[in-house]
Length: 108
Image 1 (cartoon, rainbow, N blue to C red):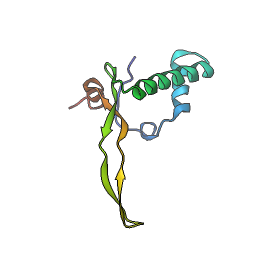
Image 2: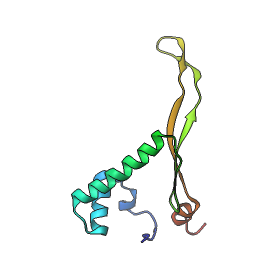
Image 3: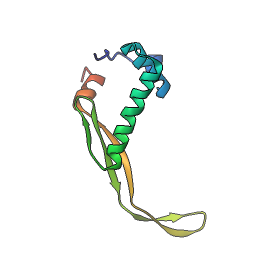
């Protein structure tokens, strides 16, 4: 069940943390906080392990989690007045699906 997206209210402008998500799972599924916490932790660990293995994780209708590869480059350390080599980095990225974008912007 997808909630209707309405104009921003104070609740929508608040940041949600893990505790808030657990409360939402409890409300919607009628399970205990412990079960909800375990479900959320499992979901996070599964996504995390996929990203560690450099897998692209596609959740239809929601979006894609993947790793972006940042090249190594020569930077500058202004405190020590020296050039430094910034190593290759792997950065997690989330790209929202077209369906999610359309739900967030229904009039466009």
